[in-house]
Amino acid sequence: LLMLIAIIVLAVADIIVGVSNDAINFLNSAIGSKAISLRTIMIVASLGIFIGAVFSSGMMEVARKGIFVPAQFEFGEIMLIFMAVMITDILLLDFFNTLGMPTSTTVSIVFNLLGAAVVMSLIKISHSETET
Image 1 (cartoon, rainbow, N blue to C red):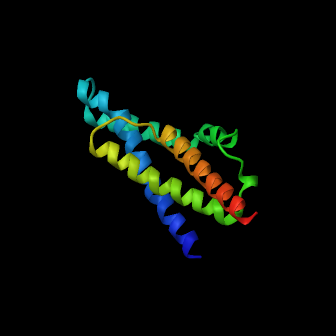
Image 2: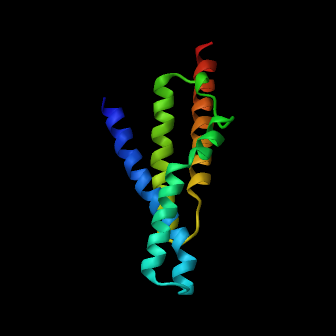
């Protein structure tokens, strides 16, 4: 139960960091160029973020098509993978945003997922070798 609560809290924090990162990337050039008023920029950005969040199933397709195969892991291992992905994603995006460096939330999540799955696989391999 505690892990489920922690995952929910981390998911909300990850969404906040991810959406703010997307908003910053979306607004940077528009605000810098002063092409239109700030109010218009914010309205267009809000609509863009909303539409992107509603129709963003493509990122899950990328993760589903071979980043890792959940059937190869036990439930506890998958929960640890997802916790590691969310914690790393929050820290990585916050770090890059703090330094003012551009980053992609999609690339961040996909490679966090890949790294966590590889590490969990290596842990499973090392434990299976010590048991035999």
